[in-house]
Length: 130
Image 1 (cartoon, rainbow, N blue to C red):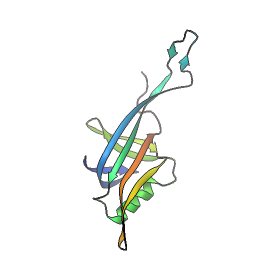
Image 2: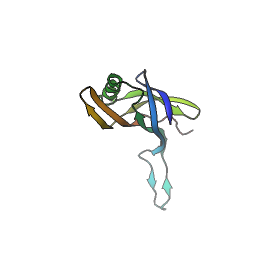
Image 3: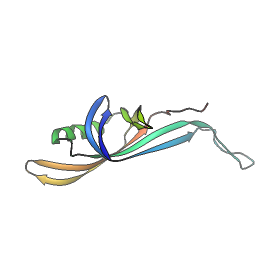
Image 4: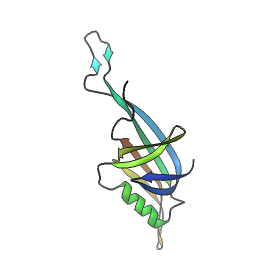
């Protein structure tokens, strides 16, 4: 996919993006549901943008990679992230529930990790009904 300056909590990481998917979730509130006629009534809260990203490690040295993994797996409520959106970028607060990667090589001089996968879930809607 290409190289990117990935930002989380204001810090940039020179990563390679293997895969990035964006998902728009239009959430309903508590007043949504089927009424007596059987018709579905919406109570749209807004649109949340969630991103799943697979990061390549070839542009990061071992220390940079370990630091990024520690940031992503930190037990914090939310992170500020910058992601591609349309022809630009979008910045939003997101939470992370799991981070995964795979060990490619173990050597005395260090381990090589790859395919770092993270899903960022938006804290709040980016768009609201008009």
